[in-house]
Length: 424
Image 1: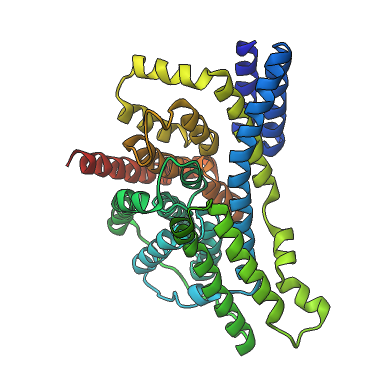
Image 2: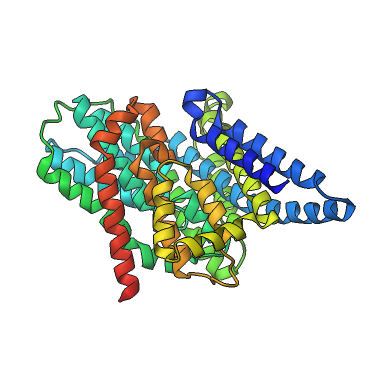
């Protein structure tokens, strides 16, 4: 029966990886995989087995709910800031006619912005900016490719910057202070190495800027206010957890509650219909619910394998076959360029126990780096890459020829720096 569940899981995994060719949304594949795996697991035993399954399912659902509420809160805060045009404060200040200088500015902003927002939102914001500043198509695609690398690297060293790092943080595998201290240097190396390479090889011009109309003073004030409150709410989540020892999702919901109240009070001169577009209720309708349900499905499916003991057995097999955990986790990072990093990290969390590998152990911090940055090697390997692919119609082959080498260069450079730091 275990073999049947593994076959179902692998088939679901392939459906997720081949989402675009088979034209079936990965959320549907993830949900079907989860339900079928748990159903087979349940009917394979007797009455006592049913009690065990219910207990295990409740345990996994409790952990998954913490991640989902955290993500929904963060997504709503970002959408609320965006509804008030809060990100214009950042994008309107980036103006230069030097392609190399602009590339550096865009990548550094993306790196730090993704540590506060997340790599997906940062990619969308920065690609929207580059559309206005870079008119040459080939040049623009290079910029977008570097945004994906920078956003993924920036998200890896922050507990709220990438969904996989957030999973490890909420799961208790890493602490906020430790992950920031351990991964900041490797992550910035991951960005700087390809950036330096392009500095000496990229040629071309930007063309003329596209000027846009000025925003009203009222709009600028509310946008800036919501930007400050939104970033403050996101940054305060690790502080809230440290001070109260409560789960991070409560801190995120606290921040959302504050922004919700403020959004209801500002713009009192607007009529009800016009003000609706600036409310948290409207922002909730714009969050990416298919992604939230995808996380639910894939984490439940991985939970079935964990409850059966399959992941623990697989970890033991890898230890016997390869032995060196640095190599194993480095390979997991490379694999995340092909397969979604969320199930990879979820599986890794099930393979290694906190009893044997405690909080902030080398395995967890290195996994956060590898899973967060390895996805940049292929454009389908991360949510940021898929978003960029959709926004700019980037071909898989073009990214593979032009950007994958740069991403791999940064990935292995950062990994080498991290391993060297651990040795020292």
